Length: 475
Ligand code: SF4
Image (cartoon, rainbow, N blue to C red; front, top):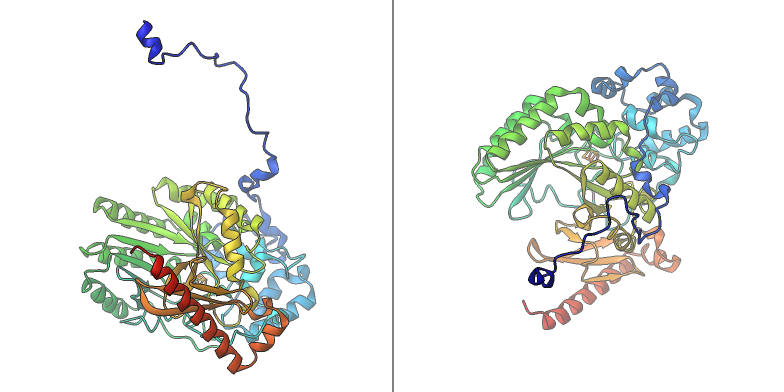
């Protein structure tokens, strides 16, 4: 008995009814706002949907057929809910935008039409002419060089073991900031698109290439958007890839859960086809997951939660890749809320991307510094595996670099220099939006000779920093 006491046998503890001493003060219920999801017939605030009942609104086919694709349809849907001056501004933006407009009724109903200029959802999908800024002079239409790295049309092979398979070129919505505005959606006044139609002939070429590259293990099925694939196409693509011995992981990329969650509740054929591929993959010890794209907490409603619960019950992992967008999720509060609400719905907040350098959306880009600052504030609010990595998808095909891993960042000129030694040789440059820089620097960006000087100075500083690091490095 004496021995047991020495080994730490405990005296009887307090009973189950004993009072507990809390070390932390009670939380403010407002800090749990990520669990409060919009429910009820919120869509009936839109004049065109006033008589639309729940069964109709929850039908994904109705959502697709009633998506707003023109200025006239927008005016017809929102009526006088939006100020006339705003709608005129949209008409101007519509003419100048590189992306065609397509907004689902679900998203349209979540926009605050009392203040559409500031609304984070409106900013992502509906262009207003008065807010457009000139493009950065270093910007190109396909800034990530996806076409240059494509051995067959629509298949980008950049990382050694991973390929991006663009199966088609349509989406349930069109985002203003789309990296693939060179291909996705209809032609606009500003851009003639590269065609990436869903043809089995093109897909066969892609399958052949993937099967002939033993180093490829991981395929991202994107577009466009996997939501747009027919159920039989999901099965065909999934089964062809799972049958290849080299393929270990497949990701179906879709923005659908963020913009049309009801499809997961009402298109059983599509979700059953995806579930069957996931289950077959599991039997073969291969991972098949969904990668989605929420950018703001207000995209997540009670409908979203019900849809994602259904996906979760089927054992399908969902990861999220957000884009960091000015006026949408570039504050600590908005990013923390998004991350917490994604976690509440069992979606892993995987990446936050620095906004790509795409045409016609300078008003939406932010700075490298903003991304670094946000990362610092988001890390620690939840578990590490629910904490997104903030990355810069390096223009020119350098791939994703952790945002603060630049070799050099000149905060005055807004030039960040990244290196990607395991992807491609050379340097990859990201440029902060010019309107965020000091007036004298903005003037320098107007002069091509000065532009060249700023770039050369940044690259020289990066080279010097790398040389110093190489001296200190042990690898
Ligand atoms: S859903 Fe994705 S691919 Fe489609 S327009 Fe938006 S960002 Fe581009």
